Length: 231
Length: 231
DNA sequence: CAGCGTCTTTGTTCTGGCGCAAGGATGGGA
DNA sequence: TCCCATCCTTGCGCCAGAACAAAGACGCTG
Image (cartoon, rainbow over all chains, first blue to last red; front, top):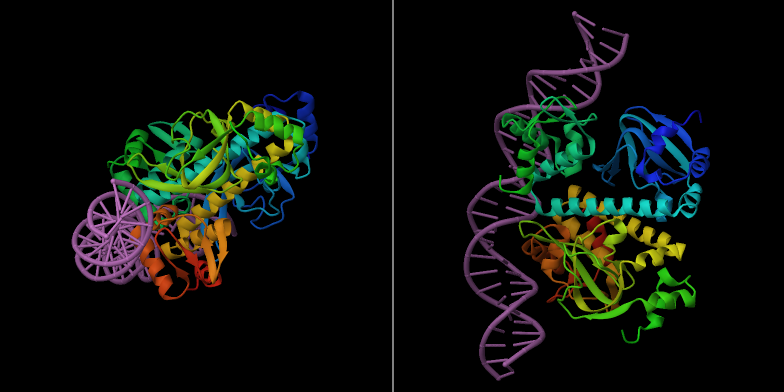
């Protein structure tokens, strides 16, 4: 399993209250895995045998419908745990997380989840809060999809992205991993064509600056205004 | 706080592994509240001071957008816990649960949540599974809203309803609480007009039977076929 | 640096379902 | 019993955005 970078793990809020001994015990059960761009950590429908923690990189979790349509359910950022289906009483993984950027993942066998939570109550509480936040986010998205039109949904999605994965750059905020129009379309329930048109319009207004698999937000405030309604 | 019907509580899966003594300790901190039709247990945005368990009846949880649009985020069924925002690190309630049918609710102050989980690990695990299931459901809904057209979404929503709140009745399955076209519209992200049209069409095909705030599903299988695609 | 696959842009056509409008049914309350 | 508040149905016009189509642009590979 090679050397697991303890400082990376230590820095995560989820583990900050853990004793060194407990942390070591956890890490002893873990394996480290490098995931190159495009590769999946596991596949939707596969039996859940492990759960994971993203140390570095970026994953997009997709679900495929029976008729082949694909959507992006969420984006996994460094420090997030994912794939803990077993803890939720599921036998299989509900989605496929694939690497949008070169990623580094910690893997534990599902049996360790018990250790994870029993031995250390914060972790359980923390995990619950995490899921709780995701639930909120999901509800927000449902509300957006139900009530807002496409342009506002895209604006919201982009704002969320720069919030979660924004890096300051001369004259704006860049989304810090490769993301295509298609991806944004799958996050907002529309088509890449429509997204492209919208981004072009925004670029003309000086709100953003596009590029192949790139997006730089020039005027986050303007975008927020747009997202909130009155265009 | 009057007499809390212990048999009602005992029957819930969430508490089945709890000792009588522990159960009593929990119930000692609870208050019982009757919620008449149309009334809200609490309001969206209100500070979270309590969490709840629905003993009897039916609640629909709505969220209102800044521009006044309303959607139904979920339906609370007997045995479900709800409004535990504090456990998820939120200060306020994210939605408004109002009674679709005369309801009976157990209320605990948020401080008791600690007791709830620490004293009894199953409860924590159970709560987490519950949230996990909701998260799944939410993702399913997101996927549906993103990829399916209105008729299929409505079909899915109705199927979920008869699954969660169906009561057998001569020649079909009835949704066991008052539900309007408007409600279904708010669950599927459409308008009551469209829902009405769809239900009329279904009625003509012999799939369902409508009525004021009523819905009887005559042919669940047919509906399922419709929901899955090939019309 | 030429070739190719992937990603993006932009135009045109077409349609699901929303907005608007009007009328009809149902049940509860006085 | 009648009235009134809700709730439901149905018709019609319109438009956001999907579907279809076809070029362009970028960047990687050999």
